[in-house]
Image (cartoon, rainbow, N blue to C red; front, side):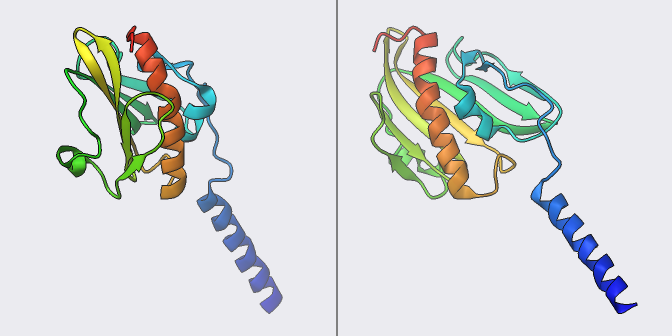
Length: 178
């Protein structure tokens, strides 16, 4: 009798462990070739998209006008949001005016393109030269939801990889000469 109870208890604990670890979940939607109107690298985008059934975007292409915002939603949960601002000069993401945006802010160094970046536990902000009359610089912002991954270090690494690949794609899509 006692062995039977132990066996049933073990089965329940194993089942709960599998359920909590996410085993059995899957990604029912296809990884998109572009995000918010900009081509995206599949390898860099995939870690930011959790398993689920339905992928959708909320907002406009982020390269059509200043202050363009777009949210990426998986199963009715906003997993990432992207924002591009066209600005007239360099604004430092590590400056005092941007400090409120971050939890555990750190400077991103070195960027493989011109500009400066800062990263927090759930977001990245990069200021990069563009060289257009209406956009001397671009401010590209990413915010990731906690469903992306609960592990902060992993989420920070995934956000950084995505943005280092994505920002040059934004600049190209906007025809930035700089």
